[in-house]
Length: 558
View 1: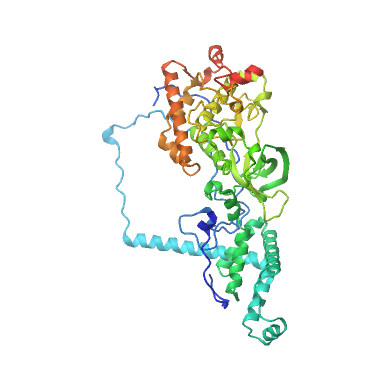
View 2: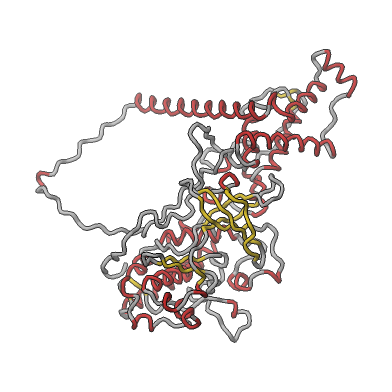
């Protein structure tokens, strides 16, 4: 269980009051212009305002060991900042013109030798770093103390209850002794007493969230950190402090990941939370196994952005609602790992420089239920344009549209996406003539049983395989596509997918890549690798049929 990775077993405590502080042939390079910022996608949540204290959160899984009973909680900030921005480049391979040295070789100046640091200098640098870390931690603690003082005068209702119990256990003053006489020694907090205590904790957490303008789940992390740093928890029974730890653990973000068996790592931590929601999520549609919502969020630059939120379902769908495509390609119904398949698709597209799938992140959204029971799900940029089924033939045959749709098809051959029907990708032609193609719902991919890149072709003779929406491999590609794919190595694929998929799924992905690679080499030998600007040629488009290309398939019914 993931919980074991982040929570230590509780230590034995006495009931004394706690005071602890606890390679292809050379081809010309495409001259397609690169537009800065064109593929920024969702970006990430805006950074916190200046002056807001930053903190290390164990939920990000840093290199140092995680402190006991403090991991698995969302940092108490207005946005989760661990996720690096998605910078979409035009491609991983860049070609630079050779530049001749203007000076004769004899006149080239040699670099000066690097001066070696002394041991004293190294020690001084280390001490400086330690002091900076100490000051940073002190600043975080000071900011946390200020927040709690503002939100919870005198420690809040939770601490008031726990300190009263400690005073009855070890009475010091006359008032304490009189309280023991009237009320007796503190009883174990079980049943109704525990439920009442949990209500006090929730009340204090909501006060922290309101004062700090953060999510209630983030407030859980704030209170937990305050306990760890000794800002809260002084003068309470050790057993009561342990109980508070348990209550906070039950409210932490860790449990949401445990339910889904979703790895807690940098790119699966929430990139967006309710703090960035500008308009409450509205139901957009209902699929076979879950409901999809449209939501307006504030992006990294502070601008409003339309997005789609799809909650992840922790209960396996019933067999009658489970996708036939997923079953036939080897995706587990009990543990589909939908988030990882989507993130793996985005990573593959980014690696190739094929900007043809919706930028996708993990998000934590409240859909109107208990504020401590938000939905963990996927948030995707809203696709522009129309679904392919609604695009007319005059648009489909445009050269730039052909090129972008072919990139999506090649990506699907590599990822094993078997459900790319004409409603699952959008086409948008901008006023300046540039085309944007965006694949959505990238759930049915990377199945371990789909090892052939063209293995998702429908078979009308087989009632089950009719559900597939793939094609055979394309009859023609351009040099940009060829170059991007052939530049990949098997090690690149393993490195890209190792933290997202299991070994069988990665092995299948490598087999599909080998199949695509051999096909591209065959196209090169047959003279069927064109230049990027040649997609409008009539002889090229005549090769695109309903069985070997998405374009041919869509043109048949356009």
